[in-house]
Length: 93
Image 1 (cartoon, rainbow, N blue to C red):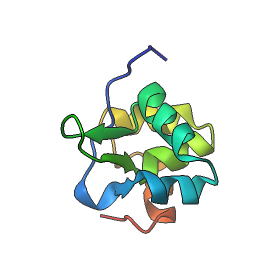
Image 2: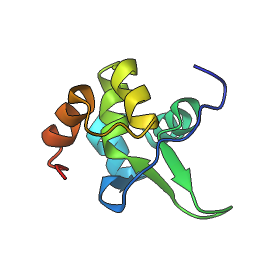
Image 3: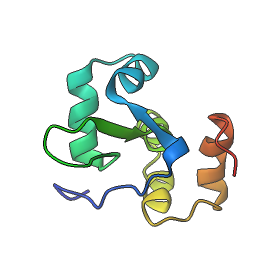
């Protein structure tokens, strides 16, 4: 994975804040912020804006599922590897 991967494109219902992401992942805020940078699983509208984290991408990182994360990054939300996470999180479309 590159130093700055392309960010995961997120739909509004995919987004959670850093606190919720940290609670879900059982990690601290710093870890989530580091993962946002490392894996491109979040976005920030501008300096000082809150970070929004992709819940499905976070789940993929937690499970070490690089294949699903790359499919999500490419926008292939219908792939079974991605659908699995969307369904698990109740984000079925």
